[in-house]
Amino acid sequence: MSNLIVILPLSTPDASVEYDYVLSTGGNTVARAGRVAATLLPSVAKSGGEVVAVVPAQALSWHSVEIPKGVIDKGLLGTGGQPARVRAVLEGLLEEQLLDDPGHLHFALAPDVRAGQPTWVAVCDRGWLRAALQALELAQHPASRIVPEFAPGSHGADAEPELFVIQGRDGAQVVAV
Image (cartoon, rainbow, N blue to C red; front, side, top):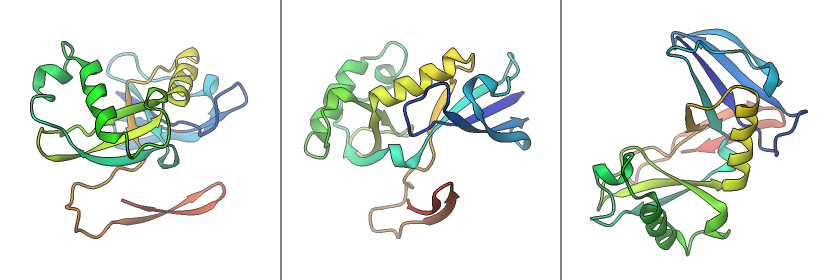
């Protein structure tokens, strides 16, 4: 089993945009890593392999909300769920916090969401995300999963944030989660 982990570019993808990637075998070993155009990304095994798209921290905003009871249940978020209803609730909960029109944004709930308890919602530009994922699909590398580069911890509101210093192309960056 091999996994291709691809960091989505912040710019709108075109033929000249390069992607940072890591190809992992078995999930524990780095087989290859580099920066190439989407069409030159390495292939993953058809059986058991997956492409993981990583959304850069700079492309996301995080918002803490409390989902009302009756909105989230097992059936609602599964294949037979009502994503339009969940989206409408999220838009209502976040309307005061958002700088953009909610129709232009993509919302992603934390995987451990429970009604009546605070949870994190990741928000990014819907058009940018769609373009980035379509570029991978056109290059024959459709994403199996989409994950954030960093996510807030589950520690309480009064806990100290964790700080990470990472080296980017434009210098060091400090991320607090």
